[in-house]
Amino acid sequence: MHSILVVDDEPLVRQGIIARIEYLELNPSAVYEASNGKQAVEIVKEFHPAIVLTDIQMPEMTGIELVRTLKPIYPDISFIILTVFAEFDYAEAALHLGVNAYLLKPISNIELKKTLLQVDKKISEQEQIHTALLETDMMRKNLRELNAEQLFHKLLHAPEENRSFIKEAQSSLFQVGDTAFALAIVNIDGNTYTDSYNFSDCDLIKFIVTNIITYLEFPVRRVAFQSFQNVNQLYLVLSHSTKSTLEKYYSSFLANLMFIVSSKFSIYMTIGGSDILPEVSLLSYEHANEAYRQRLLSGNGDFYIYTSDNALSGETIPQKNLNLLMKYIERCDTKNIEIILGEIFSNERMKNFSPNYIRIVWVKIMNVLIQTAGKMFPGAEAELNQSILDMDILDTFHTKEELRDYLYQLILKSLHVNNLEDLSSTNRIRLAINYIQNHFNQDLVLQELAFQYSLSPNYFSSAFKKETGMGLVNYIENLRIEAASDYLLHTEESAADIALKVGYHDSQYFYRVFKKATGMTPLQYRNAHISTNQPYSTGFNIP
Image (cartoon, rainbow, N blue to C red):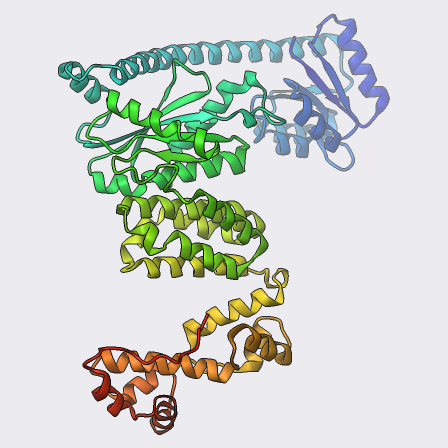
């Protein structure tokens, strides 16, 4: 007989039922007891008994409430309620909740045995039906998957001259009409098998990874296959009808996959991916393997993608800079974050690489930010995760400087979410400087800025001057004059309109400030510099 939980607040009744079960030689696999409904819930959570035999009237939680609580969560449990004639209306209500049977007190041995055997028989019948259905479905599914995986492995090693087989296998395994394919080797790293998992959990781990692959919300098709060579590996094929779309989402898909399995399930992986080819082939397999070998130089726990222009070799991916960036984000060190981003997107580094390099470095930086700021400040995680998905944003940048500045602002915003008190005063000043640089054309007041960054006005003023080399008013004025000079040289707008754009509501005052800074009126400046096209510079090094 299946296991039984007896729930009754009266010890003598409870012990009496347990003694009868033993006397009647029903031989359940286990018998548990609880003195009230709340205790019963905890026992069900831990032991999951097949049958719950419960009294109706109990303190704290009645038998009806117990059934109502457990039935939606454990629909496979069979419930038997104990009732007296006066409570029969309750018993009828319980039947509507899914109770399988009821027993009237006082309980006779014959009725107890008959009811338990009937309920137990029904459970066994349901189990047999469920098992048969599962076995049938599983056999069909396994056969389909085995055939597909065998065909896939043959495809990976098929010689190029066997075109007819390659074409047939391609159409059988993948979406007809797809013309762009990427193959990735997904390896479960050894540090996964620590506190959370044993080596015997390998199949469970791959099942989790495969399910996440299936349900990731990306506009690319994906298929996962078991590896016949290595039990710790899966093959992942991403495909799309256009190469440009797959290029856009390829690296972000891998980064998102790695982030979710590590943060939610403590599964750590290294991935090697091929470049994007018109079909899955032996060449895809060779490229994915070569990319996977990059871990020997750069370490596990990352993804590596093979490219024909060698844009992602160990020497060119700025791994040291990315590691430093992670440390600086953890420290909220805004000044060094800006310096590192400048090095990653420097002219020297960028001039030799294709747009694919920018796309993958973007994803790697976003992944660093999710791993650090996302964990430090959970409020930022959703937006950061969305930034990995939104690859269209890369098309909006016209220069690498715009891209770098966007990333810097995003990092600052992520570090700033409800956690300003965690930043040092120096970093708060750096945040204020960035805010001023983006809002210099607005009415900025020292007291309001100091309040915004949780500093006293006197301290803000002195710390700001120490950081920038000038006072707040002069700093804002220099930003406005530089912007105005640029407008004068590159637009045909009137001086009055430019004055409003840079933050001066009084055009006459703007003329006086501009002349004091440059030695010329706005019109004189435009006429004198239009041929050289050199905008005004304050001479100060504005951070």
